[in-house]
Length: 557
Image 1 (cartoon, one colour):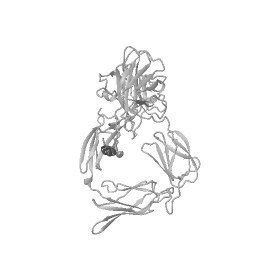
Image 2 (image 1 turned 135 degrees about the vertical axis):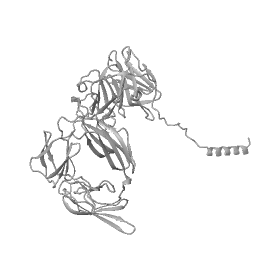
Image 3 (image 1 turned 120 degrees about the vertical axis):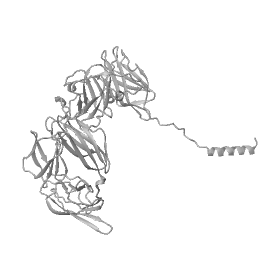
Image 4 (image 1 turned 30 degrees about the horizontal axis):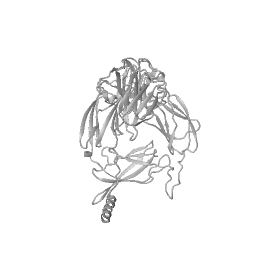
């Protein structure tokens, strides 16, 4: 090759090299699957296990997250096994001698995950027997929180092979498992027989019900285990695989205290003192041990929090004797302590100074009066003018609502005013026309709204059947997290819910066994189940200018 050709060849190679781009190799699609079991030694479901070592091999590298808390072993062991990860294999070595002729179950809950993407194996169950046969019976069910009907997640569920009431408080269970996110649970490979069933939010991790704040649920009497159906051995094994079989429904609650327990009082603002108890209080008195401070006293609907609104400023510490249902506490209340922070600039209001905030409720509502909600009881006041200004193309109309605060405990003040449908209004409350007993005054309020018409609302006519009722029922209509209306029924009746905003509504009925007008928890020590709450089976969709008619049988099993 002559020099001319060599020069041309080199030039071509330089050009091609400059045009080439280096592209990093792609790793393919992201891994979204958890580790899969490839091999189990001995195989899952083995019998006559003599060597206390189990090896489980997965299809990829993995980590084992906190097996002490996330691996459940039934029957429970005195000493936790040793868990070791060796490459793709998990090695389990038992540290104590296993019982003869016993089926053991190991449940791994969300603790096995792949090494790179942290995809969790939500449920893995391994069982073996030290005898000649492996147990093949089961029990399944669900735990809900009794007061809210929300799923009871992450509760222990215990089985005892004896029907002795003291067992949950003194003895570790025969079998145990944990509830999933939806509250479901399942026991596999248990012996045939009748079992005592008990659920526990174990706050001190000792598998015993020995703390007053622990949530519990229980089945009255015993429940028989039943044969586990044949299944695909590769299918996920959990409570969802037994949908056609009998299931238990448990309702968890925290038992009321044996005697009223007063918690630390709260002083959220000047002149407001809240005294919460752990459980409902039927009778309450407060006796001053020195001098008294004039105050208004209220109690919330659940009867567990007393609130004081002082009528004068507290400048020194006072001492009282509180007596709640016969139990006495000495309480010292101190003056409000302002929050530390930078001083307000210029003419800015001191946020720690007393004030009277006003929230305006039901503006524009066709069926509910506009209501002023005060942050502190308002002092008596005569003849306050509140303006409602409506603007038209040709002129301006002003409606004057003249109101007053009576001489009583007033935290809500409904206004009597006639407004026209479909009109736009501006509501004006002048500055400092209301004064609270805390010495604070209101700021001026100016807000605009449109008065709705009857066609903007829907209605619901609900027939409640109670032919077999043994008690009264508390009926609650809810719109999301807001309770719209509450009624108490003692017999079959129809309730008309009028003027409902469009949206989804739900209905809850509380079986008020003791007729005290509120929901009550149970008490395991006396065998008392919590009061039952029944939910209407579907959400009721309310549309504007539409009437819904439904029926709800409260005593239907």
